[in-house]
Amino acid sequence: MFHLLLTIIYLSFISLGLPDGLLGAAWPTIYPELSVPVSYAGILFAIISGGTVVSSLLSDWLTFRLGTGRVTAISVCMTAAALFGFASSDSYWMLCLWAIPYGLGAGSVDASLNNYVALHYTSRHMSWLHCMWGVGATVGPYIMGAVLSGGGHWSGGYRMVGFIQLALTAVLFLSLPLWKGRPKTEEGGAARPLPLKEVIAIPGAKQIMVTFFCYCALEQSTALWASSYLALYKGVPADTAAFFASMFFIGITAGRALNGFLTMKFTDTQLIRMGQWVILSGICAMLLPLGNTAAIAGLILIGLGCAPIYPCVIHSTPAHFGAEHSQALIGVQMASAYIGNCLMPPLFGLIANHIHVALLPLYLLLILSLMVFMHEKMLRTVS
Image (cartoon, rainbow, N blue to C red; front, side, top):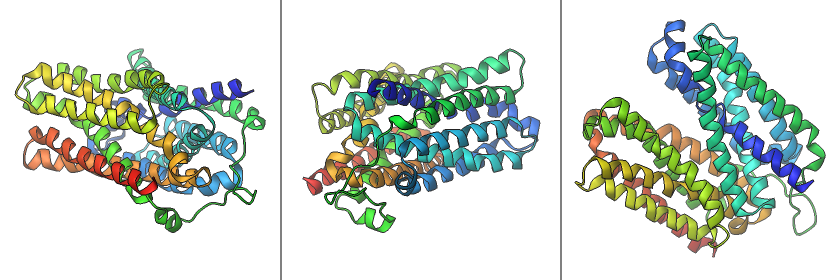
């Protein structure tokens, strides 16, 4: 039963990644059909991200009331409904409406599943599960691209991924007896949900929130602006720049597969520090006047360095803050991550527009410096 549930969780992480790249893949086809500006994708992204922040903060309360299994099943079902809603939309306001359950479903399942794995499985499974998320995030746009290149409508891509989510929903509801309950307190009762004020007051909570904010800010800023940096500053042709920028994602996915094996020898903290050093080496490769090859290698190194940080920070949360507080802490970490996703890449867009895109490595270096400082401060606080 242990291995059956683990298999279902692996499928769930692939499913988590499937919808993430759909909007970007389909938007060039969607916006002219709906007669809206290309920039309106940002509004949809903001609505989805806002929903993920809200549901991440509610994840502690939801898992207390429903349990991780039910939260996961209901959230995936909500995401499936949103995907079918996108597929049936013939106006922009309908997309905005369906973006609400899209985001709400993603945030709660992300926080709940990550906490469950952190409590019940080893660090290597956390890394490999996040590698599976990368597989899903890669397959989703591929499905959309296959539908469009075959002469189909973009709604068909959403509908196809919706059916996959619907099938997973059925599997999750059938698996409910396999899921364990919340950890007990010292008094023997189930750990109660903590209000946000109490969560933030836990020693080290503010530092880990900023750490996670910085990590996701660095990851998403690199993902969004790497291609522009190569094309506009390094003079790489646009199509070639887009291809090499994708090496960043390959670095993350391959790095997480490798990280699963490294967890057998190193601790979470050691792997996080190693990842930060690799990111620094990648940023230095971009900064030094060593040509385009070094800049491209730098992007791959940044991806490899990012690989262990997210899963290892999540997996170490119960050890640092206690099993009874881990769901609440992971919820606020996820919320911090989504806020970093929303704020920091657009901020660099302003810098690139008003100063120069060449500042990307320095921008990433500042974020990395704050991440390292806050993570080390958190370790001193909880030790």
